[in-house]
Amino acid sequence: MDIEIIKVGMADLNSSRHPCMLTTLGLGSCVGVALYDSTSKVAGLAHVMLPSSEQAKNNSNIAKFADTAIVKLVDDMIKLGARKDRIVAKLAGGAQMFVFNQSSDLMRIGYRNVVASKEKLKLLNIPVISEDTGGNYGRTIELYSDDGRLMIKTIGFGIKQI
Image 1 (tube, rainbow, N blue to C red):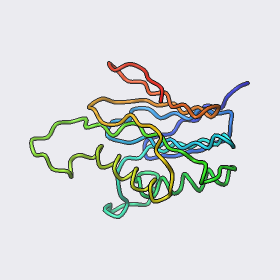
Image 2 (image 1 turned 180 degrees about the vertical axis):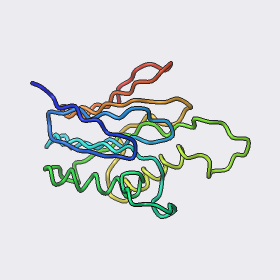
Image 3 (image 1 turned 90 degrees about the horizontal axis):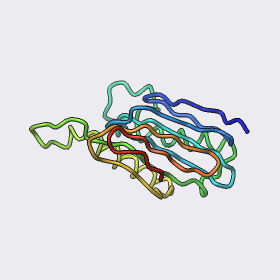
Image 4 (image 1 turned 120 degrees about the vertical axis):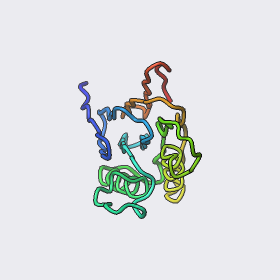
């Protein structure tokens, strides 16, 4: 069976029915939010850049922010046949790619992206069943619709599956 390969860009999101593989490249401080309904086999992926749309001057791209992207992704998946109470989440990314002299939380974008993603998922009652976040390295991820596995590829830290 041929599977559709769907590339999700930075500040982008997409969802699809089985058979498909959603992928996003170069997650640094950005967070990949992978959502999956195992019964309908509907998968969704968002490449979130920033934690909150409320702090941005230009928030027209809702896929850019954790608070708005996750809501949109869930809505899109429901339109494809997923049920919200069956959706589970996996997170990857949220690295601290640069070292700053000041330990201000404002500069810890990766950490803030992970926290904001978890908070929004908790509000929506979507459990985070696994994650590979933090560190100081980039990740490329692939979400497979047949079983919801998330493949994480790194440079220097190998390949893992969650």
